[in-house]
Image 1 (cartoon, rainbow, N blue to C red):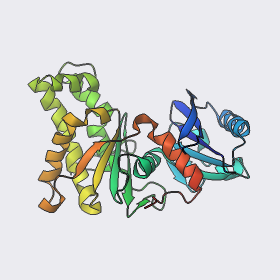
Image 2: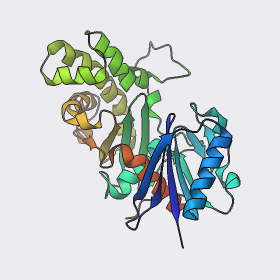
Image 3: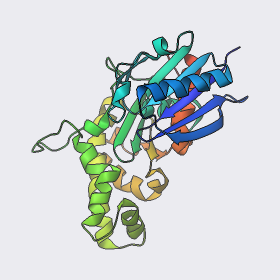
Length: 290
């Protein structure tokens, strides 16, 4: 009998669940991220043993190659860890957190029934993933479709730590934009823009126009049916989507105008749902039924 355990691993948190009767996460538990390799292995082994698991699905905030953690910037002690070797006898589905969030949304959420979609997760940074012809695109190194590194500025000096778009339109960038008009953070900036304050709206439009301009290249290349937005700004899409869409349409031909854009169905739980699905599918996860 198949028994799936799912883990959503972040830079500061670790959420776990076991597969419920409906195939969705049940018994969700949350705690701090592991502090060391030994801590991680011990906690996962305890979880697997408690639930007599046969399958393991894990989403990580970094690059995955097969069942190996290739690069996790905030949890470097996991780099190079092959989960299939660390936990022998299990079927392992390992993936980048944004890719697994899109797997969830395409299987049972906002992009269900779609064959081509883009997911943007806008938080401290920008995570992203692509569904193309019913399959999550992973690329040769597990890093496909990292739109946070897209650039629409020829004069930009570049950075090895953060891409241009991430520096322009992430949650961190919104916080910086807020400070230019005397506000504390991006949340306060969005609230002030909603209230019709012209300076705040103008400060907010700049990062959203940067996002739409860079995203236009991805839309032109991929011709998606929709763009799913996750992360901290997902609940604000009624305000932000017209700003992003105006920049998108300005850079695209008419047949690519007015791409559907909206928040994900699973919210911050998408990564855990995706890990559950990946765990069920195993190392070759990524095919969307239908």
